[in-house]
Image (cartoon, rainbow, N blue to C red; front, side, top):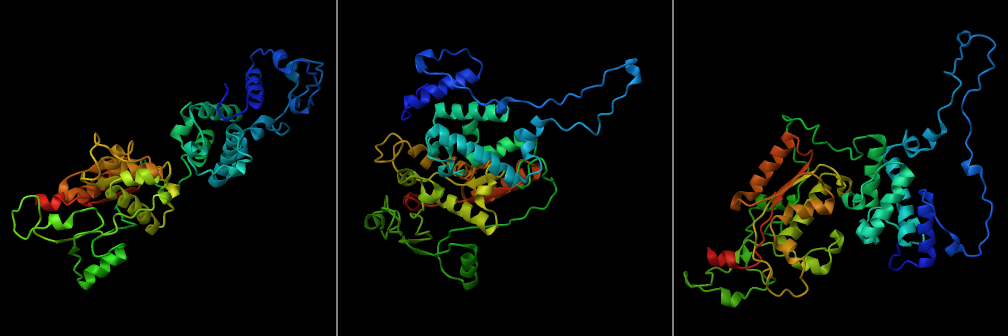
Length: 401
């Protein structure tokens, strides 16, 4: 099948070759015309005979005993197969070997100059795959590796590195190479430990150390209403209590830099970042930082059973779904739905444990921590991210109270 941006001079012969190699009778005449046949070297197809030549028997067969236990070498196919090649290698070496195979096929399929241009950590979608080329990669890998692979392969395992880990597990029958606790191995009565933390709080708190200093020094974290959220501060304030649609205070506890976000770092487009409510942005940042403080390289968690438990409530951010949304169409639903808060973290880090967002108002963060502890003790996950976020994108909370 012809593909966009791929020349038919190259695509048609490759397609015919694939059909021919699969055993289908192929008529090459229309393509080759007056082409001439050339002799191919035969050595790749020669096979060494390993059957033992038995001597000519002169008596009853029962009189001859042939001991082959020490003379027969393993079959050549075993050492040449991918399973044989992976035996004895470390997990990292196995993944690198298979990832290089995937990169080579990717360069061939998508037209990269060399496989070195294919980033093993980049999602297949960003590399340029679509539904057609994804199936082509599946078919090539299945033929090379000699294993059955599903059509949804690149969607189930979205990067060459993650896919390589899955293939290594399939070929060797191992439990994976993450080195992390698995859900099945979790001990129900094992004490739980918090090994990393990150936070943003009023008073300029940007780390657990900042929080400790603020508490120890008794610093007042209350400040003026923020001027970077598009609030009409003059119309919002009225000194008399009970004045409709106003608040009688000009102060509160705010994370003033909640409007800043390194979208490129998390692979989010500027348009989508604008449609994401600040709570989702802060949760992504603090999730990443908490892993760093725990000494865990975030990308090593891809494919692990790590869970995400978030306490959050829906805030008034952006237009409603049916209202005009300049440059935000298609991203409003995921950007403002509370349930996405935990799912976005899991998706960004490639986590495959439970992802839950819970709203129990003021106790939501504590409930999220409780659910995380239950999941760890019951074996649903071996590691968990737990926390919460509250960012007032509008002054509605002040007015309502």
